[in-house]
Amino acid sequence: MPTTSPKTITVTQPYLPPLADFVSYLEQIWDSKILTNGGPLHQRLEAELCRYLGVDHISLFANGTLGLVTALQALRITGEVITTPYSFVATAHALLWNGIKPVFADIDRRTFNLDPERIEAAITPQTAAIMPVHCYGRPCDVEAIQRIADNYNLRVIYDAAHAFGVRRQDGSILKHGDLSVLSFHATKVFTTFEGGAIVSPDAKTKLRIDQLKNFGYVDETVVVAPGINGKMSEVGAAMGLLQLTHIDQALSRRREIDSIYRVALDGVTGIRCVERAGSTTTDNCAYFPILVEPSYPLARDQLQQRLKEHNILTRRYFYPLISEFPMYRGLPSAHRNNLPTATQIAQQVLCLPIYTNLQTEDVQRVVEVIRSA
Image (cartoon, rainbow, N blue to C red; front, side, top):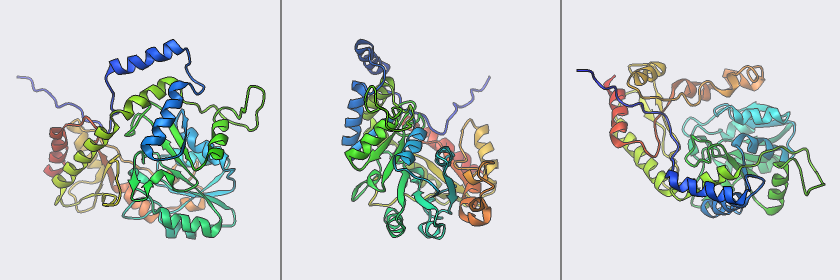
């Protein structure tokens, strides 16, 4: 008899609410005849996100990359910005789009975030800001980074693409630094299909950001800055409002899956699970990275291929490093000797599937393939 191949398990999938609920929002948009330009659903989503995230001011964007580009413009950053090589390439691309020179610093071996000591060592007279990433949603050492910024009079813009809903004892991680930029891409824990946002500390900064994302317009006849078209549509805002009604259940399920992986992989020689953020942090389990170390029987890429043969898709996230792409590798800070920890982790990391609708038996199937080697 023919055998049925197991279903394909992907790295991540967006949570899609009931179609009827989404259609109801589409009917509202159709009736209002307002499709974009800060319509009623856009305004409502901004207010709801402020409430849920525990922040005072938020500006929605068409995507997170436009948010990064605009955040740098809003703070008038020029010169050099210290950032991480261990991130999605949009982090550094936003700097180049603004004519800013990226300076790469190495990461911490435990958290995979920028190492504060390496940040301080990379500062020059041309340094204007630091752009750290809350990698996999795990908070950076925000206190150490802020001390450095205060000592050298630098701005701090957090790439918080992975950090939706992450909280510490002092509140939302998004309230640290001068600005925090979120991504609402379809692969994130909270999605508007495409989308993003900037969290601002005050109304004056939000006003400037809102002007910049709308071509620099103040009113119908006055333009005060060379802005961009970064606005989120009403359809994206509708998706976001629906996501918010289910986000707590989605995050709870991700934490369950995270725990299942950790228990099941405990004791597997050569497989190291990245540490949780700690008991004082409410994390979002945005990803589940493991390190495939030399003591494991297979190399990282061999394990990835083995999983693929069982219809389990994984991702080497982040490999290669940003610093190894052609537009960056000529920078002095991009040399591997300057980034030993990031280089090693990029060669070992593998992100396993984790998403709200991932079934426990599928998690166990992933683990069994890893253990069977």
